[in-house]
Length: 110
Length: 122
Image (tube, rainbow over all chains, first blue to last red; front, side, top):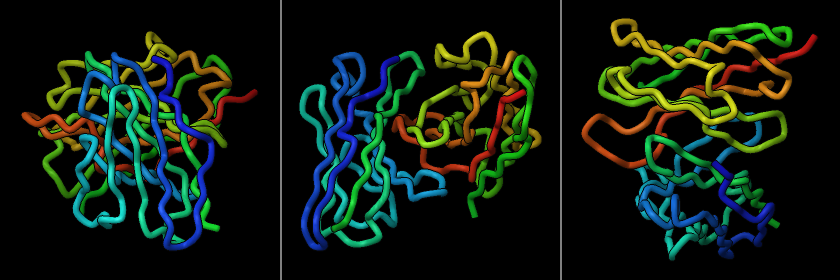
């Protein structure tokens, strides 16, 4: 049950794009298309941004998109806005009703 | 409005016990799996436990297995986390989070509570 690996930080100027990687193993990210991404602002509860690798829940801007290749999933935020500054976590189903989260990435809007 | 509200957090001594509750509203509780996720101060999210919609199956992270017990009362629309043998490293905000509806598989937690702070200290 090792955490998925994310870069500690990422940044971009308003209007630019930033991509966050999430590396797991062939037992979690590589095996299941059940990768999710969550946004967390300081002092707030996490919010689901992407499910099943690519699906955006209702209300999530289409600036947020997900993808996966092998054991690595990615979240791309296009057209960065000030309110996108937050911590982002990936998670993956790991089989047998177990889940694992990523280490988290702090996104800074310059 | 779909809502999850945790309660029961607080300060407890090492070795002590605490029970968290998560009262839900705005959806049919008995049709959803539920999870507990914790976050130590200044650290990332960690999945703790999952319970099936009917309560028949529960799973736990290795770090809490044997000490924590997740249960639910579908008649009261409430999820519970019984925490025994608490240690300093259990100090965290504990969130309840809704999993997929029965019959679906998304692997996602789409609704979260506001969190309950648990502090284990002498």
